[in-house]
Amino acid sequence: MGSFTDIVQKEMYVFNDRADRVLALRPEATAGVVRAYLEHQLYTKKKISRLYYSGPMFRYDRPQKGRYRQFYQVGAEIFGGESPYFDAELMIVLARILQHLNVKNYIFEINSVGCDRCKADYSKKLQQFLNPQKQNLCQDCQIRLQNNVLRVLDCKVVSCRQVLKDIPAIREVLCGDCKKHQETLYQALEVSEVQFAESKYLVRGLDYYTMTVFELKINDEENAVAGGGRYNNLVSELGGPVTPAAGFAIGMDRLCNLVIPEVKKSTDVFVFFLGQRAMSDGVKIINETRSTGVRLIADYSERSLKNHLKIADREKAEHVLIFGEDELSHQVFLYKNMKDGSQKQIKFEQLSNFLKGLKND
Ligand code: AMP
Image 1 (spheres, protein in one colour):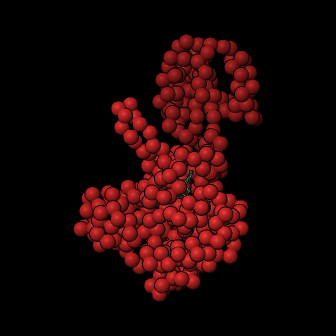
Image 2 (cartoon, helix red, strand yellow):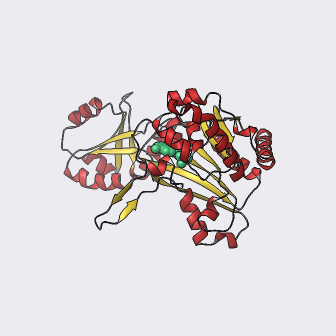
Image 3 (cartoon, rainbow, N blue to C red):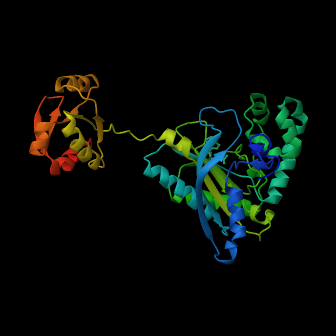
């Protein structure tokens, strides 16, 4: 992932286990997917491989809203494709997911960090620009200035933001190929009506990106819901053949927080038994009728009907099933609607359908 990334330097969970082995919890999955791609030599089997993953990731950070130490990502990667249409495809898939979730207020922030040559040229230009103002940068950025100057761009420290106000945009130094890649991507997104804006500060936390980088923001939230980009060097850096690649990761915790579906209130039905014999037969029937989508809340205490109903009332029950000797002999349950006070007898074999009919739709 790059030794100078914050994720590796500050956020990785590394610890010794009981056998004194050094373990690290994965902070992201792209590098792991690349390893799997190489281990199984997928490049010999398919020209283009489209893969996905989902699972927990771990980052040692101060827990705060939208930033957890264990969180969940769903990600997709495309290997073997050089065309900017692959980058567009990834973003269009994300846009479709949002459409499906009825989220309209989203925007992709996009930038290009260029190919190796552009990256090196731009890094030099940035260093020239930032060096004279070094003392105004935060401690971290003074180190980044030497090791990984691009990361200065997305520093959130106020004094750094001030220095960065007038930085030259990378698009000014992009080579012909990188520029063409970016323009074609934008056109493809426009044609598919995907909402995006270029951001000259966007570089993303990982070193391996080349050319396209993007983040997906929703409803003016500061935190991105998904991020991704192109990483044409990672496969070869990890020992494979030169393989262009691109991908994204969605933060499921953040996505779910933004689109919490309306939770339907479940239908609760309280169940009372009157007398031992009714209890033993009735419990069996109730337990056989548990997959109707309503919650059967049984009370096995022996009480009078009056006291049972008092409790139901106190717990604001809307529906009650009563089963006593009388019901047992007639093979029915007595249903009482606590709202309107109405009652009716439900035959054993009709109980399931009757309960389904009570469900909140
Ligand atoms: P990254 O792997 O840093 O590019 O992150 C991709 C996505 O994962 C982000 O856009 C977030 O939605 C999510 N994410 C990253 N770090 C965290 C975290 N600590 N807690 C919750 N979600 C996270």
